[in-house]
Length: 154
Image 1 (cartoon, helix red, strand yellow):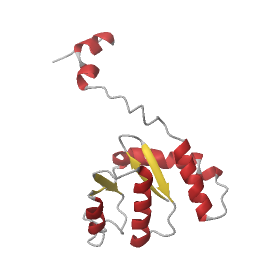
Image 2 (cartoon, helix red, strand yellow):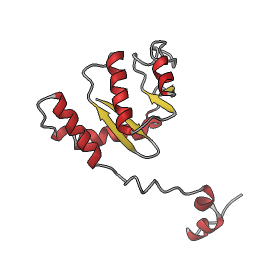
Image 3 (spheres, helix red, strand yellow):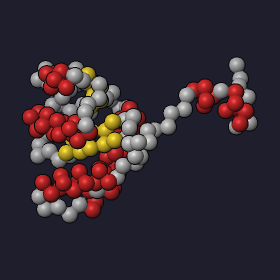
């Protein structure tokens, strides 16, 4: 399963791919991007050999045209830095615990339809309610600190 997650909206979609060679990966990425409704400017990817040159952070020469076609910049996840892809890992845990364990499909097509229904029905927050944003001034300003009983130290 290839999973795509938009980190700011916490929106995820997945596609079941028959293999992880480059042709199937590109086909699955296109399907994920269509299900998400577009693409992000930067793609943070695991260090899979079909995208990243093993032992480096360089994009495979055969994958660069794909990123160029979608207008994206490919960024390899740094090694041994799991917190850099936390929203994706959270979506993987969520899908594994809620969808995969209860999957009762006989064919890959039925499994894909089940996965699409799962992501459509398990949105954490409606699209009309974006993630609340608190500016640093509201979070650490004098009024916020006084409300918590603290004073600002300089």
